[in-house]
Image 1 (cartoon, rainbow, N blue to C red):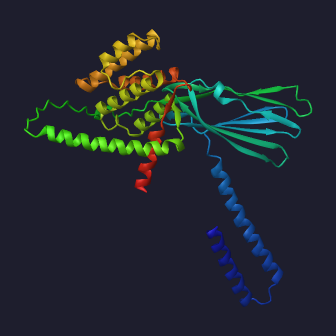
Image 2: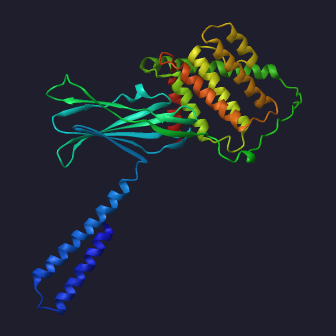
Image 3: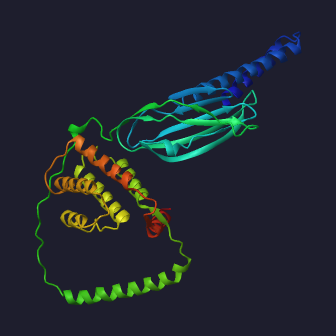
Length: 371
């Protein structure tokens, strides 16, 4: 806009100068030339904008049947397991017809629905109704998959009982591993030796009494404060699988594997699965050793035998990396991540709600202190 104004000012000055040099020129002719210049500048700007808008989506497939035209768009066909893909439906319907969009979450198999948005309706130049819906999808595992075909239902508003269908085609999508090609540059940190702490003589009993007194006073004050505000506190609950997915996204964003911190990666992903098992099945996995947890797992019937076997292999593999000098391969690291995500997806349940009120309060307090 600023460039257009500068050009316009330059042309105006040239016209004024020309009028001063040639006073016999016709004023109407000069005025017409000035208006024509402004129209040409505005047209150039619009052409640039429209060209940029066409590059938003990598895939744009068009399907037509009778009074309905549907665009199925994807912003990418290749992504990593940590990325999402944008799916868009744009349906153009002639007057006196209405269309029902497909239920995306019921058709998806290898992708999860992160969120969706109704971008509203508008009228095109031919007075047709254009409706646009947009969906954000998240892959479960790496590999080659397809965005499935979708079916759009439409009918004449005067004959609602007569339904017609318009179906799209599947779209191939590649989901790559979270690991890069620089696997040879990764360095596995060595295990530190055992350090013996020197013994010091101290009045431990006096310090113990003092600590107990402080703790008792603190607990009493906290309990008093807690009892006064508990009535007004609204508890916040989240499904166990949503908490686990959020932790996996944070783990991927930290790029521990790319930095060569393999041991820390295994400690974190093992902890994520143990906390999910505790939240989902009420098994005290985080506080116990692998052997203790597997013994308890064999005495329960909350999991199938195949799931118990997979969990046992996973935890033993993590212990080898954490406590021994086992150097996992690229495929083993990727398979470990995929196993955790697949186990959560297969066993998730909205009925297993976890009270996260204290976590939300802690995050809110921390954010307020930073601000």
